[in-house]
Image (cartoon, rainbow, N blue to C red):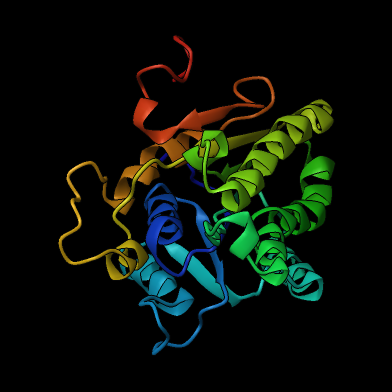
Length: 251
């Protein structure tokens, strides 16, 4: 198992991409901390942190759910503290948070623009801010930020700006923590047929180009086990895994 003995905190893991990554980590032997806001069923979208953690445990892995609104500093600090109290370390952080504000600038409410910044940029910063000291002390770890191809888009300026900011943050942070042997990378999922996407898209939507959430598992596992000497400071696409990245010779 590629992640045996590692402690992985997966943020935004109650459904979709985050849940799929959490399950894959569990299958690969990691102790998984399943983090998201949704702890109780009955909301607009299916999936809870408890359900994801239970699925990992039932499959023979180890997982614990922690409810957290990652835009709130006190909740992020508590989540990291509880993880360290339970396991004594954090080896991997996955920031899988996202809110998509795609309306034209003139019709976007300022509060909605700020929401995009808080969820897509500020929340990953908070998790890194509180998780990194432990990683720096142990001189190892990996941070995986889930980004979007929208960062290179010529439309949807609000959402594109936040994901472009996350990409730049990833690249800069990688250099900042390189001396501590911590890898920091961003992974672009491409089109994924998540539960939320199925609800939001019209019934006749063409899903032929979409991958299932489980397709995110293998590339996320690869990034999770990297360090600053092997693979860091990269923004990579899920569709290109084992094609254009990683470099030849990196297993």
